[in-house]
Structures are given as structure tokens and as C-alpha cells.
Image (cartoon, rainbow, N blue to C red; front, side):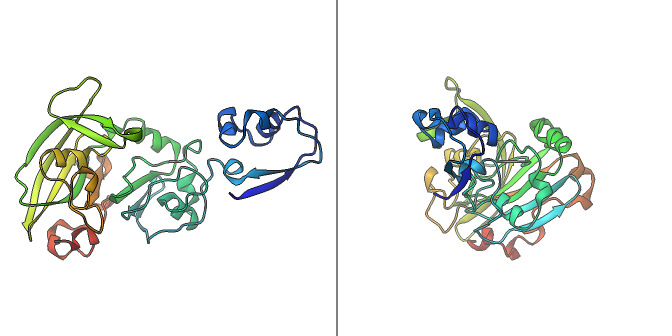
Length: 297
């Protein structure tokens, strides 16, 4: 693990107090990197100590990006909208992470989008997308806009539209409400039921088939809630798992074919020029789309 060498100028009662005074680190964070015995050891003046770079740069975004090309779709004084490719994370979980949208923004100098909500690694993201999901991702560039949308997300966002490709001729169009309960390690998978089960959560969506070709269906999902893996688990429960989604019974493929197309609030609905949708999709020329999401059909 990378580290940084520090030399203390003053005596300190313990390494814990020295680090809390120098870095402002919480006791919980320090325990991730040091044993209780190490933290209680007195820290002497002029002594050299090697500190993990993860601790020194905690909550900072690494400006190195290692991943596929990312497109900036639209930017205003209040937000920036980007196209997130499949197989990258929305945000890092530690400084060493380099394969996320926020690392890309840091590498390109979009620091204004990274100065919101600085006490959390997800910064100004108004929502998140799964690692496997591609599509539009929007970040607030100031705290007021961030709180107005994310602090009131269900009421502020009018529509959340996704594309998905499933095997077969989809015949489950309509509005659906099911109940979800996280299972597996750290809730890694959702169990879906048509009946309420104890502490399960309610999730709703509307689904419309756009076309059926070559044994596959392109469907549009209007997501009315926003539970983890909701679309993936709910389509699987309806008998049509997403192509590439082997976790929920989908056929093997080069990627998971789920794409966030639009997140709409009042500005987008009222102002056609806002153009905050992912331009890689154009419903009027569905069969001519160049994005890899539709290459499979």
C-alpha cells in the first residue's frame, strides 16, 4: 500500500491524538489502519512515521482515471450531466479507486462538480447507477441545487426512464408493484414477491415494449421508486431477465443491457432546450443507434 512519510515537530501523548490533530481523522477511521496498541503509543518529536495514503487522502478524489471514455452531455452553473459507460462505478469508495465517473471528472479538471457534499465520496451525485448499468448521470455543482433535488428526490424527479433488452417477446406491459427484500452478502441480491413480506420494501414501475426483433425485446421502464437492483430483479420476476444479467437469471452476454435514458424534473419537462437526456439514444431512429446498448439487436 502506498504511504506518505511524516515527521512530527512536537511530542504527542499518542499516535491517535497526533493524527486527529494533524488530519482531523475520526477514531473509527484510524481503527481501519492501526491497532489499538499502535494508536495508544506516544508520538515523539522528530520521529518519522509512514502514514497510509488512504488515510492522508481520505475523502479526496484521485485525479487519475483508468477506464473507458466518458462523454460530457450538458453543463450549467448548477449541474453537469455525463454519460456513464457500463462496467465502471459512479463514485469511488476510497482514494485508491480510479475507475469511476468522479475520477474522470477530477482528471479533466471539473473540480466544481466535486466540491459539493465533500464529506462523502459520492459528492454531488443526484443518484447512482449500478456498476453494470450505463446511462445519464447528473451531479450538482452547488449545495443549494444539491439539496433541492437530492434532499427531496422522490418529489423533485418527475420521471426516471430506462432502456432494457430482454430475451423473447416481452408480454408483460403495464404498471407493476412488487415487494423487495435484500438477501445475500451485504444485501447483494433482491428477493421479489407479489406479497408483502415482513420488512420488505415496495417498488413500482411501468414497462412498455418498444420493439421485438431477432428474438429480443427492447423495453422502456418508467421507474417510479428507486430500490437497489429494482429493474433487474423486477423484470426477472416477470419472467424476462435482462440480457447479460446472470445474477437474476439473464443469458450470458458481453454486458448487462440496462441503460438510464432520462431523469426528468420540471426544468427538463418545461424546457425542451435543456436537453439533459443521454444523446446516445434517439427513439426516432431506434434501429440506427450507434451505442453498444442496441448493437445486440
